Image 1 (cartoon, rainbow, N blue to C red):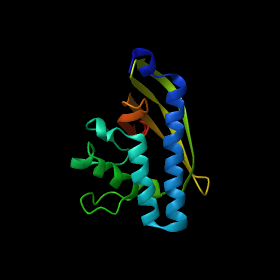
Image 2 (image 1 turned 90 degrees about the vertical axis):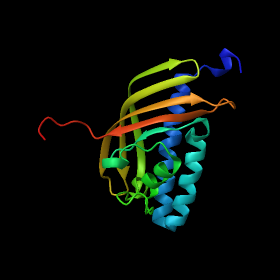
Image 3 (image 1 turned 180 degrees about the horizontal axis):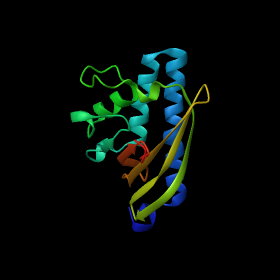
Length: 164
C-alpha cells in the first residue's frame, strides 16, 4: 500500500464511529428480540469487523470494568464486556445488552498520522425508554492491509464530577 492509500480521513473516522454505534444498537436489539445467542453472534461479528485483534493486542478499557479486569487486551475480554455471560469475567453484565437504540458522538479532537488515527470526544447512548448515558471516549485506529480502519485502542470512562 502506498502513502496515499493508507492516509486516514476525518470522514473515515466518522464512518467508523457510526459503524461501531450501529453495531452496538444491533447487538442490543438482537438481545431484546432474540436473546443472548443472537446478540453474541452479532457481537462476535462486530469485533471481527471493527477491531484489530489480528493486528496485535487491542488496548481496551471499558467504561464500567474495574479491578484486575479493568484493561482488556484480549478479544475474549472485549466480547465479555459487550455481552457478559462469561465466567472468566464475573462482573460483566453486558454493556451491549442494555437496549440501546441510538448512539451519538461529538468530537473533541482527532489526530491523523497516515495509517494511524486517534479520536477523542463524548459518546451518548440512548436506550429504548429514552434514558441517556454519556461517556468520555478515546479510540485509536489503524488501517489494515485491506485499507479498513480497525480499532486498536478503546478507552471509555464516565465524566468526572467534582461533586463526588
